[in-house]
Image (cartoon, rainbow, N blue to C red; front, side, top):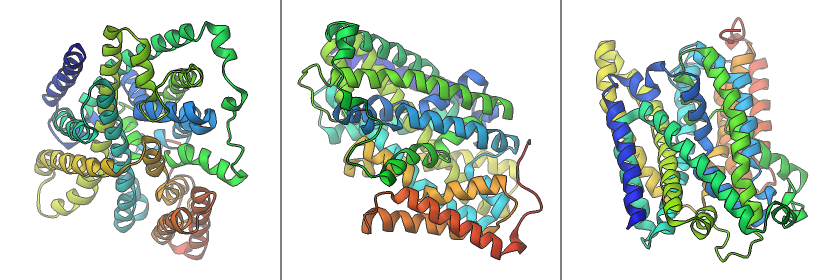
Length: 468
C-alpha cells in the first residue's frame, strides 16, 4: 500500500506539473518546444534524460548483467559520444535557423517531397522508442506489484497520454529536472548498498570477472562490432526526440553548450547502473537477467521507504521520456504534414492556435500505436536498437551532407533515404548481414554522392551552415 501511495504521489506531482505548464501553452510552438525559452540547465537535463531512463537504467543494465559491458556498450559510452557529435555537427546550426522540427531542415534544404519521405522514416522509429519506454514502465509496475504486464502497459499508456496532452514540452523538461535528480540520488544509494552487500569495495571490484569488462563480444566479427557501436552514435544523432530538446533553447549557443554538458553528465551518471550491473551479476541474488534486473536489485537491497522513492522516480523518468517521444512524433506529423495543408486556406495566427488541438490529438493516437507495438515487443533493448537503426542511415547522410556540403539536391536526398531503408530491411531481415546498419550507411552515402555528382543542377550555391 505504501508503494502504491508513493507512486500515486509521483504521478500526481507529474500531472500537477502538466497542469501548471498547460497554463503557459498558447500555441503550437509553446506546446512542442516550450516557446524556445529554455536555459542551459533545463536543456542539459532534458538532453540527458532522452536516453537515461528505460534504456540505461533497465535495458542496458540487464544486458550488461548478462553479457558484460559488451552487452550494453551503447550506455553510457555510445550515447555520450552521440551527444558530443550532436554538439559539434547539428545543434548550433539547427537552433540558429529557428527550426521547429527535423522536418523543417529537409523542407528548406531539399523540398517538400523529401521532407515527407524523411518524416515517414523517422516517425516509425520514434514509435518503437516510445514503445520501449512503455514496456519499461509496465515492467516496473510488475516488479512493485502483482499486476499483469498487459494491464500495466495499458495503465502506463493512459497516464502518459493524459500527462503529455496537458503539459506539453515545458511540463516534460521541468519533470526531467525534478525526477531526474531524485533518480540519480537513488542510483548512487543503490550503488553504495550493492558495494556494501558485495563485501566492500575491494570485494565488489574483485568479484567482477575479466570477461565482463570486454567492450566487444568475442563471438562477433569486426563488422558486427562496428555496427553495434555505430547504431547509438550515428543512428541516434538525428533522433527527433533529442533534437526537439535543444531546439527549445533560448539561443544556438545554449543549444550547443547543453549538448556538450549533457554528454559529460550522461557519461558520469551512466556509469552508475553499469557498475551496479557488473557487481550485482555476481552476488548470487535470485533475480534473473531480464529487463527487470535493476529494479529487482533495488527492491532486494533497499529499505521499503527508500525503494518506494526510487521506484517512483524511475517510473516518473520513464514517463517523461515517453512524453517527449510522443511530442516529437506529434511535432513531425502536425507541423510538417498537416499544417502545410491547412496553411493553404487560413491565416497563420489561427493555424497556430488551432494547431495546438491537432497536436494534442496526434499525441493520443501516437500513444495508442506505441502501446500496440509495446505489446509485441520482446525486450526494451531490442526496441531501442530498432528505433536507432531503422532507416536512419539515409537520414544521417542527408542531414550531415546537407549541412556541410553544397552538392546534392532533392534527387540525391530522396535516393539516399530509399537506399537506407531498403538496405536496412534487406540486410537485417533477409540477407542476415553481420552489419546491416553499417552497410546501409555506406550504401546511402554512396548513393547520395553519386547522385549529387550526376545531378549538379540541384546543388546549392554554398554549404547550408547556419551560424558558421
